[in-house]
Image (cartoon, rainbow, N blue to C red; front, side):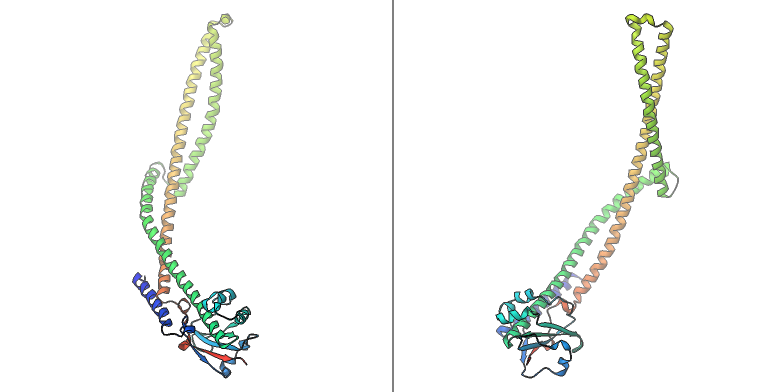
Amino acid sequence: MIKSGKHQLVTVLLLVCTCGLTLGAEPNEAETGLKFEIRNDRPSPMLLRTRNFEPSYGSTHCAVLFIFGDWGRLPTKSVDAILATSAGRAMSQKQRDLVSTLPFRHIDFGGTIGNHTYFRLDGVSEDNTKKMVEAFIEILTEKADARMQSSLNQQQELQEKIAEIKKELPEKKKQFKAAELKYKEIKNTRYFPDNPNETYRKAMETVFQMDKTLDTLEIELAGIQDKLKKIVKYRQNKYAADAKHFSRETLDKLDQMYVEQMIDLSSAKARQEAALKIRNREKEFLNLFSQWSNLDNEVKRLKQDLVMYENNLWIAEKKLANPTPDMLPPKVYQNKVTIYPVK
């Protein structure tokens, strides 16, 4: 892993390099620190070897420059971005109109000068061509800064995620151990299979059976309670005026039936209470199983995420310690731009 001190060193070096470009520069070179070589001859055959060299319509000059690293993949062809730069705002209206035709081309990478990207930019005058180069370099610098900032943001996000997991993981492990201890204690007391899935299946079967039993008892209780209502109704007639309609034998029989139904009612309620107790017990075990299983999965996920984030952080820090050229301010070959006439 790269220490934070190295990151600060990289940042300081970038600032020194960026500031160093502006010291002692001419007013029109303040942003880039570039040296412009003005030529009156045509470019050499080596620079003319590409069919893309045809100048933009209306241009009078072209600038040739080579930037260290592969910059061909950057989305530099943006009219609004060019015109929004400080150099772009200083362009003549004729040059600004030319910019809308995208007068800049990526010629090759490494084909002309090794490890350098070859660009050609067109202008309507020598001064406007310089401004075009300065605007172009400003755009590339913004893209490089954005790439560097993106890597720094990624590093910070990964560090925060790692810190969060390292804070959360011990507590989750503690919760998992407690749930596992309780789960195994109940499982080993009530069940024999070592297979957790088989244990879960048997507990579910018990819950299903108790649900069926409770449904049956519900029907049985409804029948007993209905019988009791009718028996009570007839027994109450024992003291009514029409009690003569019931013989002593019948009344004794009603008393006997009442006692029997009360016994059946008590028995059914006891079985109902037992079935509820068993079902609740198994449901509690199933909830404990789910809690244990979920915590197990959560601990595993956190461990996997930690490994992944630490690996990604290592890659990000390695990238920051050895940034690619397109993450740093563009470095022009020999710090020189050559401007040629196109006619």
